[in-house]
Amino acid sequence: MADKIIIIGAGIVGVSTGIWLRRYGADVTLVDRSAPGQGTSYGNAGVLAACSMVPVTAPGLIRKAPGMLLNRDFPLFLRWGYLPKMAPWLMRYLGHANDAETRRIAKGLAPIVSDTVAQHQALTHDTDAARWVTESDYHFAYKDRAAFAADGYTWGLRREAGFIPQVIEGDAVQACEPHLAPQIGCLATMKDHGFIRDPGGYVAALAAVFQQMGGQVRTADVVDFDMSGGRISAVHTTDGPLPCDKVVLATGVWSKPLMKKLGVSVPLESERGYHIVFEDPEAGPIAPTMVTTGKFVATPMAAGLRCAGVVEFGGLEAKPSRAPFDLLRRQVRQAYPALTHGQQAEWMGHRPAPSDSLPLIGEIGQTGVMTGFGHHHIGLTGGPKTGRLIADIMTGRTPNMDMQPYTPNRFSAG
Image 1 (cartoon, helix red, strand yellow):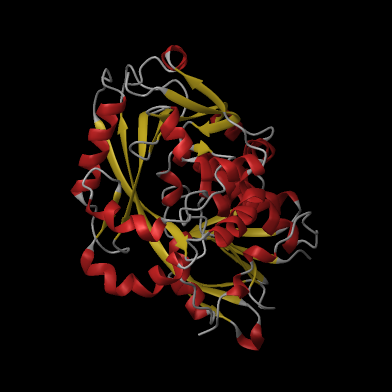
Image 2 (tube, one colour):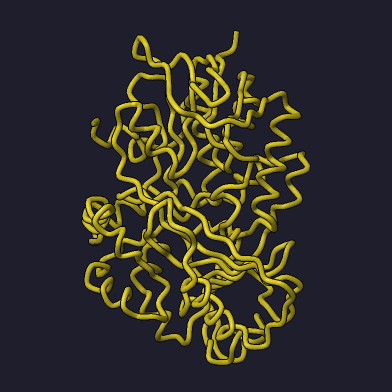
């Protein structure tokens, strides 16, 4: 008889894991307090960012951070009253802001993201969800060649991983992206990337595929685990206990309190992200574009132009702030001065940010509990690969890559 597996979390990692486990013949139930794809997976920029393996904690961050926080035009915000609570995490996070750690983290992230388009295509092959996956270029828009050169450290790491941009300057920028502001004079364009035209709808479609394959979806909140004998035997939910043989914990930043119940203290914070969808847009981008002056990504989607970015630290409880939305609107107007649109829809969500910027993928000791969370900015990009790796491990297949960088056992018990 196949193992009975419960996946906690119906975001991109959870549904990807469920589909691959069903393909391998496992008995799988997906549990989430909300409908599939309505959490963090809903609100990202939608880009399948294969080249995004360089962490935020690059050398120089400690020196630059105070100025970033004090600059009203820089997309970094902090609710100062939350600082004492996040200080232990922040000290560990900033401890990785050096060359050796940045290179180590980038080496760990590259295998998770570098083949993202192929992984999404494999996940959706011969299913209705495939229609949401779109191959495209991915532009990085700079003021000029000097601004691009100032990002040389990051591009150097990308080049070492095999990602070499096509650099476009002058009039060729407007020929490629005619609606960008004239002060943007340089594009670093990555080929062979892609985007999802509706991330929330995509994950919901994947969940429907999972159910068509015989997987079950339950709406409930997970509150505890039955670990008698040292291994998982049941998940306790607001809807009652669910017996199981194995569990996958893939509920993003909300995995932290559940990990605590399993005896593992994970240094994980919410990095609050914001987006605005401009409906019925005219004079926006043709392909997904990272506007580096504003650190936001503009992506043409089914619902309109989604502009996503901004980093805010303020925990899980506080309501959205107004300043990030106001800044995002100013930046969009500067980058796309001719943009016209209908209504606007605002959103704020929680990226799961481990202190070392590497996702947690693997079994907690010998408990039968697998982790699949902590993807920071690369959740949609790396979700299908992560799900496939987890399914392989749980069904006795050996992944063809080193899984040690992602082990949840790297964090202390307590």
